[in-house]
Amino acid sequence: MSVNGNKKGLFARLLDLSMSFMDRERASIVSEAKGVVLEIGFGSGRNVPFYSGVEKIYALEPSDSLYGIAEERIGASEIPVERIASGAESVPLPDSSVDTVLSTWTLCTIPGVASALSEVLRVLKPGGRFLFIEHGKSSSRRVALVQAALNPLWKRCAGGCNLDRDIEALVRGAGFGRVELEKSPRKGRPLAFSYKGTAFKAPVP
Ligand SMILES: C[S@@+](CC[C@H](N)C(=O)[O-])C[C@H]1O[C@@H](n2cnc3c(N)ncnc32)[C@H](O)[C@@H]1O
Image (tube, rainbow, N blue to C red; front, side):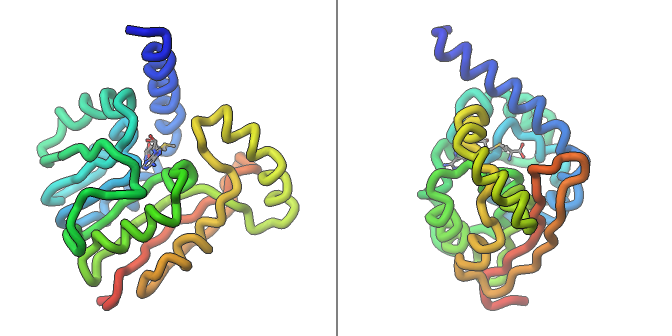
């Protein structure tokens, strides 16, 4: 393997390790998924063990190194998983073809996040749900200023992750029929602010 390949492999393992600290929070959102699912930013597949009774998962993940780790978890599951090796800005699925789209800590990283959210809306069936748990801009003005100041350095060190995206504004501005949202500071992590929610494609059931 090349030096670049080794670096990517190491980064993928480190990301997998850092995302393991979120595992307790995954269960409550992933278990809400139903039917045909598109997961954007599938990463190292840490959500796989938390799915129950879904028909199929389209696993959208641009990184081969992360998907390589995910394959170990996919192998231990009975749910059919099909990889989409592209960014979420352009999803090669037909309009109105999936019941659920899931995103866990991914909207922070997608470069064209507004395009990705229009793709989410396009591929969802009418009444379908976008489930998300994300981190982003704090509701405290002071913390948000610190997040904005640190973001350029953070983004370089953390593989393109942004500390200060306004997830509420992005999701509410994407054209869903209804958005249900819980926001809270993250305990013990002063720079992280959590957004957990469901956005419904109209007509809302
Ligand atoms: C912080 S990780 C989260 C991974 C996973 N969702 C989890 O909960 O463990 C961010 C993910 O976004 C993916 N990503 C980066 N650019 C993307 C894009 N344009 N479209 C979709 N996913 C992207 C990364 O490869 C990575 O898997």
